[in-house]
Image (tube, rainbow, N blue to C red; front, side, top):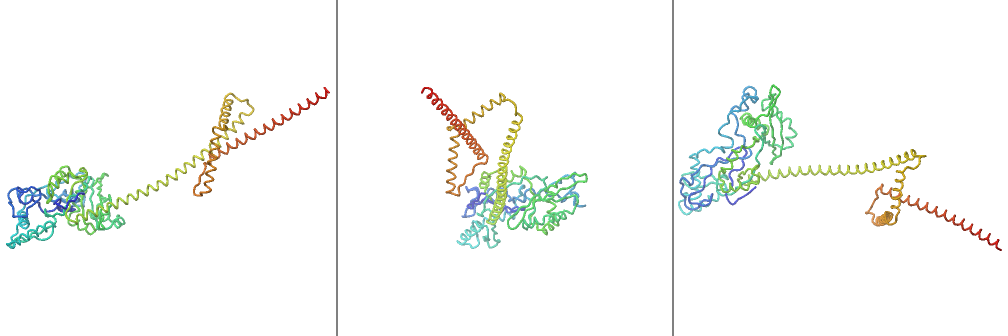
Length: 510
């Protein structure tokens, strides 16, 4: 959103359903001035063909509610309205649209009325050369009128015989203007989307949604072939709520279609229907249909009333997304405050959605942690079952091979196992690493006793393998000790036998 309070840069606010009737003009004497929207504070300038009254008037427009609402038909909802509020069925041809649309004459440029011409002349006289007092005080009055025109409020007195000029914020000299951007709708007329703005809170609308649908169905005449559906509900500033609806019409042969948005809007704009909607709390109704390329081109080529063409061209150049956004004028602090409230409301909705997404992510993270823990548990259980299955297979294979000689492949397997066992028992390889690991474990246990907050745990499978390895080492050492004991006994027997032999030989020689 671009703001420029230094020069005129907009026209009437983004009115929902009407356009600004005031016409713009190109300044005082455009043949002698250089700036596009500047004007002189000195004597009145020439108002020739290219001056004050020259050129075609640019019409204002209201973006957001007028787009697509110009296609109301002459018979309301269709040919069946007179006999039962039907929408004309599927074979009804769309009636010719009215030439004057609800865009406030945006796409037609009527000629200037004499009253508007007089208004422009009176405004020029009030700003440049009032003749109310006939002395030097008229110059002070002119500056005061200029100040009121800049502010956009007050009355400009310039002649005793002519009523004063009423200055509003729509006048082309009001400085409190800006050009912003609004998102263009992308729905088609066939989608049948119509927006109803209720002067109620969103919670009240949602709690009474079913009653609201029934009430709207009664507004449509209670026709059983029509069904009212709610597309969406959104909160607006000032405790208002936007409800998007569409109506589905069912034919006797079982097929159905959506009632066009322009047809439904034309029905809602009828005087008696509009009164019923107001009783339901509806303050505004509008269609939500996309603009045609011709309409967009017409909007961009003709600056709104009071907007400098240079500012308007710059706004088109600065458009961040020309495919989705369109420049719209903003006039006065009230319109700026309204857009600020809408922006705050959308920010809150986005924050609410982000909070919901954050909660969902946190829940998914918890589920992921639980799932990972279960996966690890199932892995350990699978490994335990695998070991148990292997032990069962070993015992079964031992029983099956009981009484048979060792085969060649079994001998090779035994050799490989002996080699692996030797590598495990080698002091410079796995045994040394195991001892180092055990020393680290002892150090960690020691530090854990000192610092209770630091705790380390060994995986159960690894601990089981370590115990098994240590058990095998202990069995090997026990077996080695038993062999050494047997060897010592054998050596003692040999020594004893040798001693007896020596004694027997000594007795013979003696």
